Image (cartoon, rainbow, N blue to C red; front, top):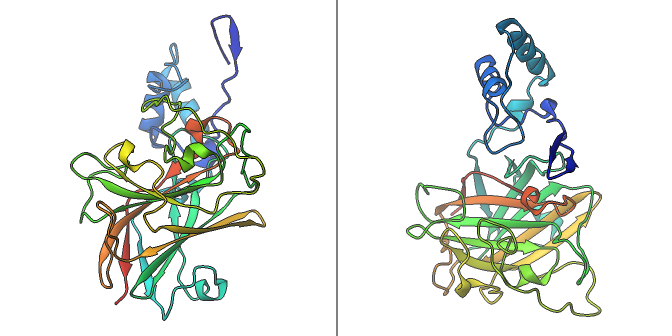
Length: 308
């Protein structure tokens, strides 16, 4: 626990059994973190430990890390093959059953015990349209009604036509990326603000729209934006870019399928064709996590290859 400004702030201990460690898990890494602390975290430096006590503490922490837990959370680039089918039907579970599922690992921006760390990707195309389906376990369907607090669950696909994109974080001025995204609810996301509203480092003073009475359930609309390190005002809320979405939550699992024509007439949109390989990254939001900065998890770049 820590105290500041006269208020007691509870700092819950990190769950070492998860295998998520910001500073590495070797004895040297752990000793460095214990002695020096962790910048930009609630972990302060430790003073007064003898070498013997430090070695004992490091050994104890290492015993808390379950075997294989770190490997389970290591991000490695995968290749998702978009199988060629006669006609894409994103609503057909029978059609998806014949498409290989590729497991991917996600990492949180800030650690939270409820962060979504695993998902599965599938893809198919028919020479005219492409469909990408994302599935992940989530015991709660977080779809706040209009006017209620919260931003709900969500998913985003980030595309790049670069052979080796320099960074997986929303592009740059020189290397923009195309993002398809969907959130269960709130009109801020429908306006294309993603999670750039009300939180640093990209704080925007944009008021939410008035809640529409009678709207229930969750959104069945996706949006697509061009990001150059941040979402530009020109791209806010563009649902006319041809990206469609089919979301479903049942039995503690989200299944969300995006579809779009292979070729888009919109500037900056990813252009696809049979035989082409592009880069694809994934982001997920768990709306049941109270702090917006902890809701998001994301992957590194993966490859998506469209079968001929």
